[in-house]
Amino acid sequence: MDDFKKLLGFDPEKLSADAGDFFARMRDMQEGAASLTARAESVDHRIAVEYSSDTGVRAVHIDPRAMRMGAAELGETILALIQQAQRDVETQGRAWLTEMVDADNALLTDRSALGKEMQAAAGAIAENLRGATAMVNRLQADLRR
Image 1 (spheres, rainbow, N blue to C red):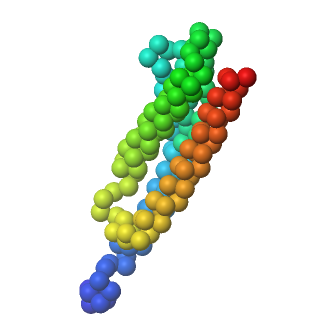
Image 2 (image 1 turned 90 degrees about the vertical axis):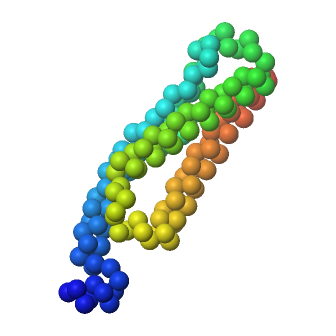
Image 3 (image 1 turned 180 degrees about the horizontal axis):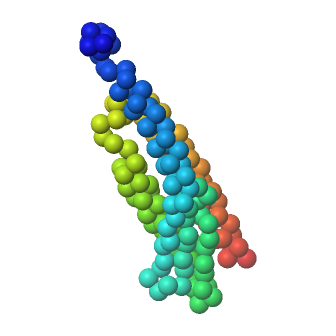
C-alpha cells in the first residue's frame, strides 16, 4: 500500500475519509448558514435592518421620527445598515466555516475545487446584494412620493 501511496502522491484512504467528513460538514454548514442573521441599528436607534444569510434583507424597521430625515439621507442610512448587517453575517459565516473545516483536510488542498465553491458563494452574495439594492431603491422611490 505504501508503494501505491507513493505512486499516487497521496493516501487514498485518508482522502476517502476526508471526503466523507468534508461532505458531512458541508451539510452541517448549509444548515448552520441558513440560520446566520445579523441586525444593524442606527446610532439613534430609529432605523434597524435585519439580514439573513439565506434570504438577504429580512426586515427594515423605521421609527416614524426617522421620517424627518431627508429622503437621500434616509436611503443612505438604510443602505449603510444593510451593508453593515451583511458584513456581520459574512464574519459569522467565516467563523462558522473555520470552526467546521479542519486545515489538514486533504480536499482543501485542491485549490481548483475550493475556487469553484467560492465562486458559487460569491454568486449567492451578489444576488442578495442586488435584492437589497432593489429594496433600497423602492424605499427611496416611496419616500419621494
